[in-house]
Length: 249
Image (tube, rainbow, N blue to C red; front, side, top):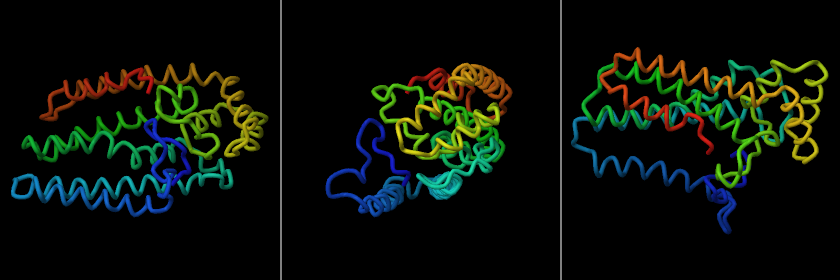
């Protein structure tokens, strides 16, 4: 959908020979297979309806997030920095990443373990959505500064006109001249344009800004976990947090 070349170290599915736009139909096969598997292996269990609704809800949330992402900054579309705000960025991250990547797997395990009360799920959701935001900011940073051999993809957020944490933060810190330069170069496929954007990131020392953000966000996350009243053991959340803290891929 966003014109990426690789994902998880492999060519994107639509880039495979004889695939192309058939990839869209293949995605529907995958989604339909999910519910077929649930019917085969989970139907009759007391949590069947809960997990079926969880997957349906998460699918909708992710579609909303992807739509927000692509309409805020269409790939190779007009650059409109008026929409590149931290509020819009946070909304994109919440719907596009945090629900399916963090809340879904834990909520699924909770239902299967017999933890279905609203308070426990609300408490877990609060922690996991914040963790998902933290994770996506890391992803945005690694897209620019990570090693493609390590992260498994070639970073193209600048060329793809993505409303990412780096550019939103840069716009908050930039001088009028730097903002003008970003406006002229961001969202363009040329190598020189990408270098100019990265040069402004260096001038603003976004690497240091990110490292301070990473440390403060992690500490806030641990405080939130320690205050949790969820029936889920705190260790579940801290293991997640420690797994992504200072990750390189």
